[in-house]
Amino acid sequence: MVSTGFGEQSRISLLEAVYHVTGEMKIAYLDCFSGISGDMFLGALIDAGLQFEVLKKVLGTLPLDGYHLEINREKRNGLFGTRFVVKLEKREQGDRGLREIKKIIREGDLSKSVKDKSIEIFESIGREEGKIHNHSLDQVHFHEVGAIDSIIDIVGTVFGIEFLGITSISASSLPLGSGFVETRHGRIPIPSPATIALLKGIPVYDSGLKYELVTPTGAALVKGLADSFGSMPSMMVDRVGYGVGSRDLPDRPNLLRIIMGREQTQQQVETVIMLEANLDDTHPEWLGFLMDRLFQADALDVVFSPIQMKKNRPGTQIQVMGRPEQMDSLMNILFRESTTLGIRFRYTQRKILKRSQIEIESPWGKMWVKKITNPDGSSFLKPEYEVCRKIAEEKSIPLKEIYFWIMSLNRNLT
Image (cartoon, rainbow, N blue to C red):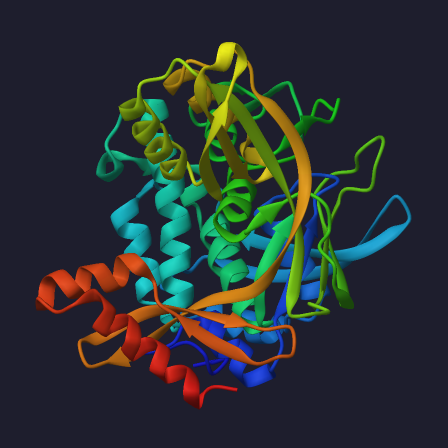
């Protein structure tokens, strides 16, 4: 078995384990100027330092046969990178259901984190395929995405991220092509229905090219692995890798670039969208429902403030904070669930302390808490309300007792 040393952490997450071993958070940025596919992602990781022999050994533990792996140095528009290729002994492969794919992944000699994340990505594909073809998740049969090369691309990429110690990934907006592609279902439009469904909530734009630039596998990987989308985060660059696509494009090098580095400070500056609306004709009960809906849609913050409006009428100002790619979805909720006729919006920045979730042992069993890192490098633990509330209800103990116990752990932290 090839192990990174972080695979079977029982009390602490993979990302936290990496942090404690290295003393730093490794981050990566996917520069998808020519789109993304599974083989391009793996090629970029190999180009950036993932050892090919280690990758082959790990993937060889999956109960799959009839293939072999190759890497080649290839050029696109004068730039060289690594092309990852899965050579199949026969092109025709039987369809695989989600249950069979899960079994294949679970039998591999992989860490629990890699297995769980790989299965999660396949489940995301299955849910969207099920909606498209009107099947339940158990009825979905994976065609192209269930083939040997796609399984290898997904599992190999997830393993590569763990192997390289990458703790956070962000990605650029994704360029989409147009036209048609031949599949087992027949001739379908580009981007494919599965691809565009997986990209909900991710910023995209029209590349103007009549090619498939984002494959379903690429869409599923970036959806499942990237934490944010937009411009490159502030970092100290350590490595750059280029994954080569299979064809030449007329107006750009067909490459996926991954930029790896370290966060420069214990603070992170990020861009957020602020939405505002003033209301003087909304029922108070509707406002409570509106707040619930906004938080269910992953708004970062929602604030109601009392204001005095025209004609001396008391009103409520709503402020909603979200990520830039959430603007349209959050606006739609505001229009649908309130009486506003207009919404002000602006992009602004906020500086936040580094935070992560860790699992600790407590008198009431294992529980998740938030770990915050101060600008000077010291850290402290902060209770998670929902976790503490659940324990308080199940054990019939005061909520504040759990809070005080967690806060007492900070005396031993630096």
